[in-house]
Image (cartoon, rainbow, N blue to C red; front, side, top):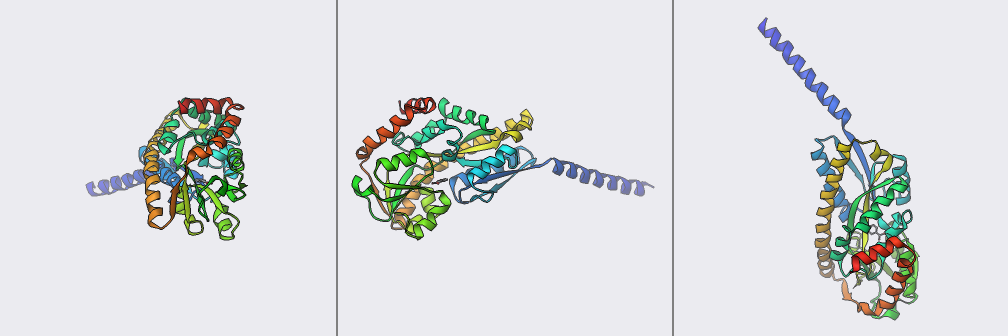
Length: 326
Ligand code: BEZ
């Protein structure tokens, strides 16, 4: 009789454990997170760091599946999906989000940051945080920044003077400030998403690429364009965003848990970006890329003209510029 009681008890115990597992896995939520960058990119590393941290802190109740290289669609499509709640999270370029919230273009004021450390420090400024808050007018929740390296100039032929930019076919990021910058240098900019850069280089459609070093290494762009001019001409943040309809459906506790994981990943990512900026220069040197610096004072007139145009027409950009250049 005792034996049959123990057997029955064991049976009930197993059933109870199975039921608990079923309930907890029914509660676990899968977050879909889209991004356009390739898996080795800093932004993807930051996304993975966030995913691991949230998995642990939520006791496996939030799992995050990362879709790199635009596998969920281009940035505009991802914005549509976030707005409708079709996906939960994404890392989007500040460039594309500036089409929704124009003050975000403040990040692209040429010559504003001497180096990546200065750009990273600006992320904590109240004007940079205000840019994130304003995304809620567009059904998006700006959760934090992840910084790609500074923008530099990669070219087929060596660039050794201001005149060398003239009439050159330049891959420019699709954003008005980038276009003004390259036109100011009398180059011929073509707005082009990242996914089109390698094919355009392969078919000789480009002389110059405006890009960060992590991308140059990750996409091996130096194979077609072996000259690198270190200009630091602009910063290039990514913004970690959530779908507002989804975010509003969470409890305060869940939102706090996700925000804490974002903050940790953000800080971790900033350190990684600083380290990667130097490592990429060393990697490219080792690969035989011709690396030169540029006398940036030669670009001052064009920088000033672009900064004046945007700071005089957008109060958010003016405040961001003022707060971070004092
Ligand atoms: C680019 O289009 O240059 C780019 C996009 C995402 C991350 C880094 C660079």
